[in-house]
Length: 217
Image 1: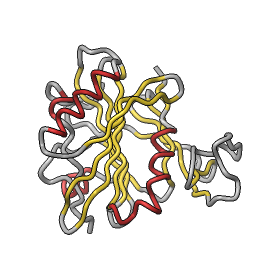
Image 2: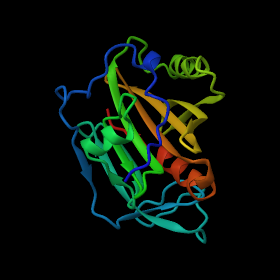
Image 3: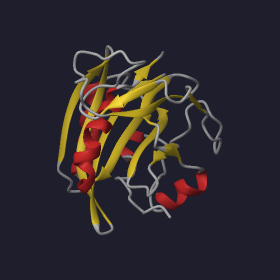
Image 4: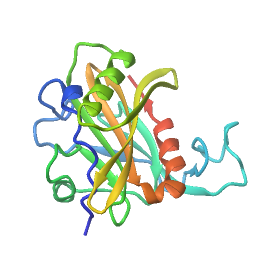
C-alpha cells in the first residue's frame, strides 16, 4: 500500500484557473510513451548518460542506474527517469493524493516514498516568463509558512522556474523540488520528491532527472 506522502498541492496561484490535461479531454488519461528499456542509464551524481555517451559532468566510476525515456503530452515533453519508478494508475493517484489536486501523471517506487509527478495546467498570460513564474510559485508556498529556495535555471536553452522546499507528511518530512515552464500557453510543473531520509540516495538522481527534461515545441 502506498504511503500518503503528499507534496504541497499543485499551487493554486500557479494554476491561475481551473486545471486541465493539456489538450486531453476532462478525465482523459494522458498518454505516456516509453523507449526500449535498458537503452540508457542515469547517474547518481550528475546529468544523465545517454546511450553510453557521458557528458563532461559525469564521473565514469560512479554508479549508474537503468533508466527510461518517457514522452508526455503529445510528445511535447521528454524526460529520463529511473526504470525502477512505475506509473501510478488513477486509483493509486487518488489514494496517494486524497486531499489535493492529484497530478495527472506520477511515477513512484514500490512504497511510494520517491516520486516524479507532472501537471499540465490551464492557459496563462505571462508567456514563458520564468521570473514571473518563480515569483508566483515562491509567494504561494511562502504564504503557507514554508521556507522556499528558488532560482531560474536553463536546461537545453529553455529557462525553468525552480523551487525547493521541505514539507511535512505523516511521521516524516518530504523534500520537494519543482520545475515549471510554459508550453503552448500552459504551465507544466514537474516535481521530484522523496523523504528527507532518502536524500543521500535519491537527491542527485532526482536532480539528474529534472535536468534531462526536453521541451519539443
